[in-house]
Image (cartoon, rainbow, N blue to C red):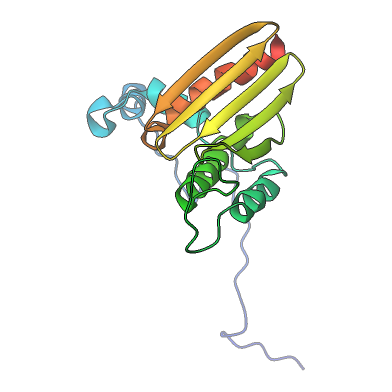
Length: 182
């Protein structure tokens, strides 16, 4: 004989098709658009929010990013090293800025870069594309982008790039699209 207690049993019921345990609360269409395009709450219009979402870093970085980050960290000069012009080492500040640059921009770049230090201690990254080359100079204070596209030369300099990342992403996106499409 099986004895069932109230503690070990459960009630099973089959709901009717009209039963809804979570009633839908519909907002008025005007209210939904007001919330979406509310400029006073965010200081941005809905289009700015969409634009920033498109130009935000990708959640899935390219496979080469970890290798480049390792190479940048390995290029930092030894502790107590007196950095001079023409040195083969990167300063810790440049290495940190370069790692942040690649972490924020890697999903827009065409391929894995060839990286090396400049004579002034900045990091230089070169990319080969089907329609030209892209050279990027990364410093803690500025980024310079050089693109050679079918005989044309394009140059962009972005000062204080750490505080202007959406603008930097937009410029890099435009240059890499030109290099991809020709």
